Length: 403
Image 1 (cartoon, helix red, strand yellow):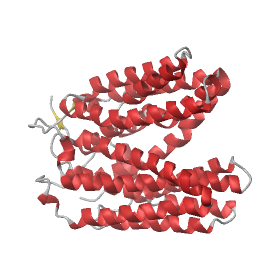
Image 2 (tube, rainbow, N blue to C red; image 1 turned 90 degrees about the horizontal axis):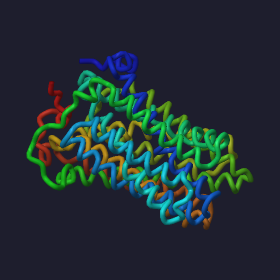
Image 3 (cartoon, one colour; image 1 turned 90 degrees about the vertical axis):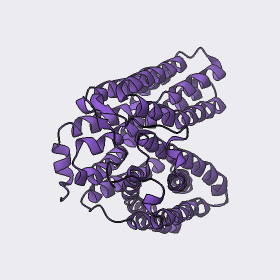
Image 4 (tube, helix red, strand yellow; image 1 turned 180 degrees about the vertical axis):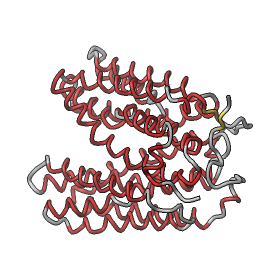
């Protein structure tokens, strides 16, 4: 059955609704850290700002798989409602400004821990609401559209802070998250989704060795992407304009959006596609080592972003194959966590090496991406049946509609 393409997917009932509302609910993943940073820098200290962002990010990395596991065992709406209220409460506690540095860090951790697992929930829905042949297109569209989060999210914080002060950025993050979650759970497909009733192991999807190897590859990809952001900032400072970093990273995001939309036209591909795409991502980072003038650098960064959505799309398809029945939402959440942890590590490592020169910082991305490619080669060369026992390549771990 041929793929219906991006227009066909968008015309499928509920697709546009769940896709757009999930993006609104996920805006705090990009706006929250900036809102915490701006609030702490004015109300507390620069050291406290770093503490708040670290507490939020670390708690989100821990909480997302746990909440997704609850989704697999229960239903999506109750978990999403509870987590959105918990996260919003954490943001509002910080916004009061009366907790001190330690109390604010606890509030930030609560906000991160309760971050609704909208990303995992959305990706668990695709096999249920689009035809099997359209699942790769849906994943690619999902990855491409999420680039908008990292543009609109920070802009929403800056606008809120400009109009209402630092605390307003936190309040807006909480409100956007709650509104997006409320609209997302209104969709019939979200309310009808059920996890597969199976006997569960305490390790969930981590029980599958091949899935664990895949997470290493995802972390390597995240390390490359996280390192680029810091290296580009250093490049902008060397060029004499710190504000240039925002435009350069926006160029890379535009390239990623373009790559994701173009990849919706690609067929499903075979097992070798994932390592090939990972290799293309690594190669795209290499020309950045030339550190040319800013206009050329912007073009090179846009090119370097083209392969990222295809890589992530191929990873999600692999997750759908590897996740054991009843663990699909948690599996997608672990992928998000692995990417987040890798990105944080990449930022930290690049911050250490970039002091020796911008090229040293830029070199980390292709090295990390090449290591990730090696991991993906291992994944592609291992028979799927040896670790999962799933019977179909698409939807083997999907949620079952009941009622």
